[in-house]
Image (tube, rainbow, N blue to C red; front, side):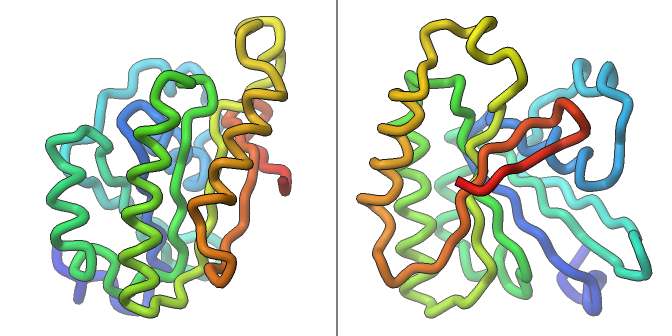
Length: 179
């Protein structure tokens, strides 16, 4: 499909490292409520476009696979991929503490490209997999660790760059709360 196939639709781009939850968020945004269906998801290769209509508005969600082999291409051809984007969501898996630095580095590259292009796209960062009972299922992940991640985010993002930061979960039918 080409960019022209999506004219008149609201384009949402989801990027982040592999296994950060982009496809789960996509399915949640599309209204899928059958939680067991999320268990059989396979990694997205390159990118996948989901087009749907909700409340008289057409949307296309561009779910970019986060494997390292694809990220270089996304950054090299960034302008092409984000052309016509209304909403950009960057996803960080807060439970994957070992890859925080990698996720922040990728985010930094994206923000720099958006700033270089003077893009005014609506930009959000989702601190994803902030699931209910997280303190029980992952005792090593403390609020202090998440607070440090937020602090590191704020250090790398220029003060002039406008964005929203949310903690998200697909459980309890996808929720987000402002950070």
